[in-house]
Length: 429
Image 1 (cartoon, helix red, strand yellow):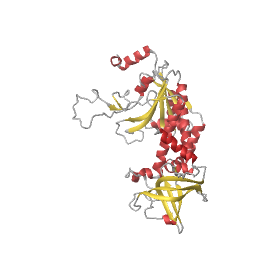
Image 2 (image 1 turned 30 degrees about the horizontal axis):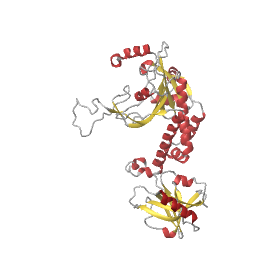
Image 3 (image 1 turned 90 degrees about the vertical axis):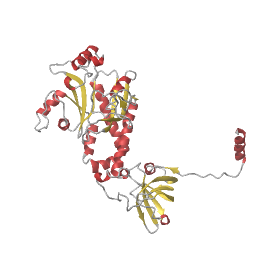
Image 4 (image 1 turned 90 degrees about the horizontal axis):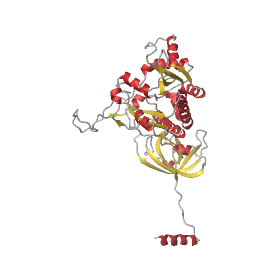
C-alpha cells in the first residue's frame, strides 16, 4: 500500500498536465463574513435564516442571519433566483463571492452564485413578523422560536460573552476551574430551600434513599471548593445552583448560574476586593468590546439610560465603607424605608440601592459585618463593643449586592468557641 502511494506521487510529479483542482467555498459565519478584511471576490458559503426578502426587476436582495451577529448579511442575487421558497424564516445555504458593498449601510455583501433552501417556512403562519417588535410576554409562547428575535438573540450573545469573559479572567489569574457536584447531600449552611432528588420511578419510601442519604440539587459549590483549596491555592466554579423558594422575583430564581471562588493564604479583605473589582471590570469591558451592537440594543430597548452609568462605574475606583458607616448613612437619610435600618440587622435591597446612589452611583464595598449575621467560619475581627467579622459585599447600581466574600477563621480555638455557641460541636466532632 505504501509503495502504491509513493508510485502515484511520482507519476503526478512527472506529469506535465496540470491536475484539475476544485476550490471549495470557505464556510463563514455571518459575523466573520461581516468582519472580513479580504473582499476581493473570495468564494464563501453562508448558512442561516432569511430575515428579509426584497425582489426588484433584475436583482434579488436577501438578508441572512445565523445567530452569530445582531447584524444580518446582505445577499445580492440575480432575479432568476427568486422563488416562493425564499421567504422570511426559511433556512438557506448561499454560496458566492464576498465583495465590497457599494451601499453605505454595510461594508460587504455576498454576490450569490448558488442558493439552496434547506428548510421552508410559511411566512404567513410564522408567529413573528418582519420589522414587528413583539412584547416579551408574546415571545414566551414560542420557546422554540423566540431566540431568533433580536432582543433574545442579543441577550443570549451577551450572556455567552460574559461567561467566556469570566472563565478567561480566572484562567489568566491562575485559578483552577473545578466542576462541583450538582447532586449533593449537603445544604451548604442553609443557603436556601432545597430541591430533593429522587428517581422518578421510585415508590416513595421515607426510609430509603437512592444514595442511602437524602440528596439535593446544589445551592452552592462552596464546601467542595473549600476542600479543593487545600491542594490548589486558587480555585473557582461557575455552574448552576438551585433554590426551592417560591418567589417571582428576578433575584430569587429557582435555577441560576453562580460564580464561586476560594483563595488560600489571603490575609486581608483588600486582597479579596481587588479580585472582585478586577473581575467586574474585566468581564464588563470584554462584553462591551466584543458585542457592542448587542449591548447597544439592550441599552435602547431593555435597560434605557444604563450606558452612561456603566461607563461611570468602569472609570472610577470602587469605594469602601464599613457596615457601621452604612447604617449611619441610612439612619440619616430623608428617605422612608420599608425596613428600618438598625445596627445588627441585615441590609435589605432598598438599603443597598440607596447606599450606592448615596456614593455617587459607584460600586461600593461594605465591610466588617456584625458577627451575629454571618456564618461561624468568618474571621473574628476581635473588635468591640460592636463585634464584627471580616466579611465584604459589593453593591452595584440598580442591583444591590452582586458579590460577597470573607476571610476564613484559621484560629482553631476561635472555631471551637463559635461552634459551641452555635450548638454545632457534636456535629463537628
